[in-house]
Length: 254
Image (tube, rainbow, N blue to C red; front, top):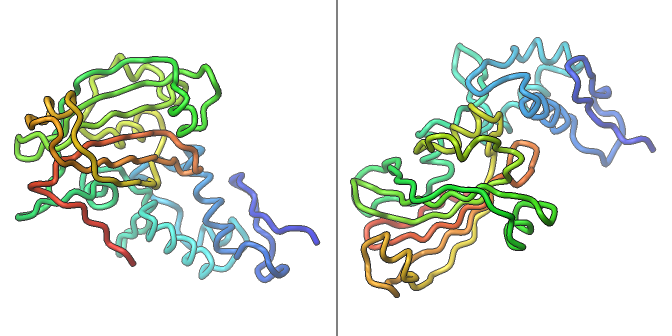
């Protein structure tokens, strides 16, 4: 039996609805097509998508199928639905990052996007661990960024980032903004769509403790995060050491 797959070109059409059994649902095929167009830069962050009716006519599916695909993309924070205005490609603004990717919440008071202070930035040959995390070939180069994040002016965490140099040319020559995900999207067309995190309790090593202004060995939370682009390519490995005496890690499970 031939598999039914949605094409990715602007004029491509998915197969008729209900064509075959045991295949990827048609709305998922439509979703994949729309995401591929976002990856290819057909629609930039903040830009409106064509109407559901236009997309349905172009792709040869029902409007309900398009709506279901867009609803799933909205749930994944890839697009934003605005009543009476349409559907827009999501931006990596501070509010989105705060609630989707930054899970550290003050024990008291409202959530705030942290400030940052860059400690160092440079290029290097990727270590074995970086090659493994970022799916890089041996001998590849990475950009490494080390910075401190602050809430209300107080150091909260130290983070070390590794990025594939091939994906971010010229990054080391730029002033590094607080909102890195926004930079990736605006400058390089790379949207961090999801992240996978591993957490464990550790004792703060001497170098990190000095940056955070606490004694070595202070209890801390280590957050190991791998960020993936829209097409599921690992684009950022971020390891953060966080003090938790004033904040806690909040994850909403649905």
